[in-house]
Length: 311
Image (tube, rainbow, N blue to C red; front, side, top):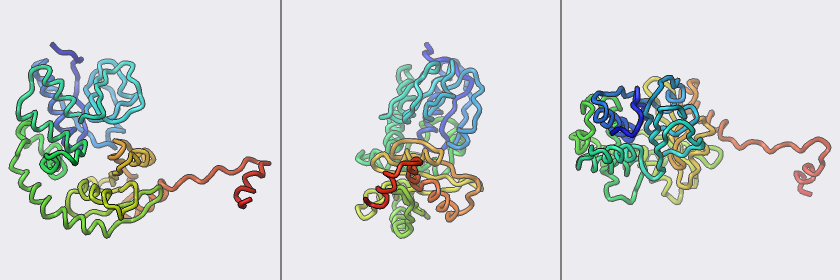
């Protein structure tokens, strides 16, 4: 028996394997419950912020819960931090699991689990939560990079909507070769192209290789003393997107200053459309991330003047 309201649409994150797998698993659950396919729509973070929520019922995967999603007959399945308490929507949330893992738990409760999905969801969980100590870490990132390399909708069409076909897909051989050859070259080059920014951040330029792994290596390097590392990539001919990574939770706060969001150590933001080059981006980041000037002393209060003068 269905335990969730029937959605008009499933809405998911377009940028990674977690969103792709979560969306397809929700479609599978809807098909089992109601006997037909529910439309799947996917969004990058910037376009998601612009979307109007007009449906009377929907399932949302891999996007942080917020007040505009708090609607009757809406379900949000997610693992990002949030400040809004649900009053009308159904929120399924666990910060220690990926969105795909949460969706798959629902599938398994209703007899839709398989050994191949068990394995694929595990790999997606390892990649999305960046569990570097897991023995499947390299394989998990190879699977996740399929979405980065070939795109969300291209992969959905390639596997004809069947997520199990992603497991051990022949295209993984391309990802494995890229990891072995490109990553060391990319790490060496990026190490020489780091631009300091305010608030303990730095921009890391990248050319080849797995950007997430390169940035992880740099964050682990004791000679790199920046708390947040930012990388850029351009979406087609459109605007630049910034990815922020940290080790101790600093990334999210800076991402929010850029009108973005995400996880404490893995966040992102879209830069203004006026940004047309890396130098434009550096100038913008320096302006936005610069610490706020101290509040001036109130009129008639001379204490601040003495403190400034060192008395």
